[in-house]
Image (cartoon, rainbow over all chains, first blue to last red; front, top):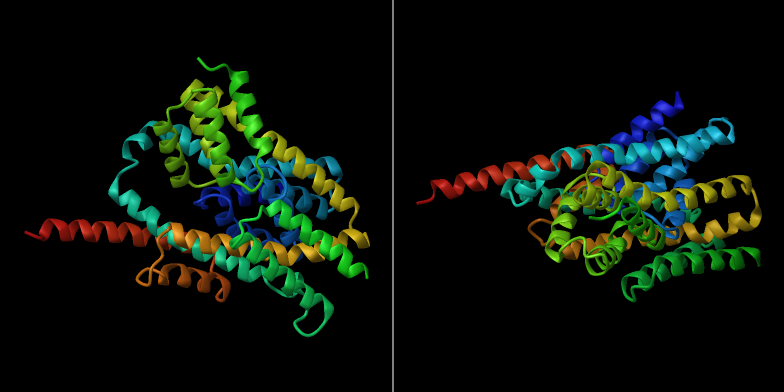
Amino acid sequence: MIFLQLFYTFLYIGAFTFGGGYSMVALIQDEVVRNHHWLTDAQFADLLAVSQSTPGPIGINTATYTGYLAVAGAGYPQWAAVLGSLLASLAVIAIPVALILTLCRLLQVHRNNPTFQRILIVVKLAVIGLIAAAALRLANVDTFGLPGLNRRFVVSVAIFAAVFIFSWRYKKSPILLIVASGLVGLIVYSI
Amino acid sequence: MARYCDIFWSFFKIGTFTVGGGYAMLPLMQRELVDRRRWLSPEYFADCVALSQAMPGVLAVNMATMVGYHLRGIRGAAAAIVGNILMPIVFILALAILFRTMQGNTYVERIFLGLRPAVVALIAVPVFNMARTAHVRWSNAWIPLLAALLVWLLGVSPLWVVLAAATLGWLHGVLSKHNKTTKP
């Protein structure tokens, strides 16, 4: 039953990601692409492009998009796919919201607990590695094309390098870079 | 006392006008909640940010839950959450429907061929930015490196990596506390 699987999967993704946004990418990729095959690597990259250029938290964006495509891909009608996207979006926030509402006061008091702080420091370090792993996993034949002196691969590497430099060195906005890369793709591959 | 519709409206604006996820929302939240509405003091806002980061899940939704609950209890939290995620869900849903119907369109396919390597770069950049803010040094760089290798090459689930890191942090805390008490 795809609805149950979606709900359970996003419940679990929401419960085990710390640090927001990008730290979710590795776990979502693991579940959605590797385990359930709801999306291909290329579709997952497309989803990240879309979620980085539309409003809202990346965790919600990915849940909405995956929920829709997973149910539609399984052959259900449109309304069921919309239902699936809402279900996944609610599931991803359910556990953190329940935790915050029940623990709100307790948390305020224990926020500076040294053990809690130490746990967070190490988890944050590991999360950096998880994001790196998500990027490395995405850098494959699906996203870059077959390595070699062919148009697709050379263009892909050039776009990667340019976006990396403009984002890291010049702090250009992701929307601008995504729109520019899309235009480059449209022009280069149309020639 | 804050009205439900004001809570909803504030978070609706925050959710609709920030692109790029949780951290991009923080400055807008501060301006709206602290400076404009004066619902929170700057100190309380900073506390909420720290707590939201300590909780699992989506940072912006955690913030909305905490602030909404602080203002008007459970219903306030619901107003803030719905306001925050309404437009993002509508936007993505519209795009998902659009892309599915345009599947196989050569122009869309060409655009996405250009986008995919860009996305890999946009995910790689925060790794380096976070390495700076999390104070990665030679002494602790093995933690992110090991995490990346386990997940990337060995296919270990990120879940186990997070749980192992939490255990390690806890053990470190217990041991260093023990050291402190045994020292004269």
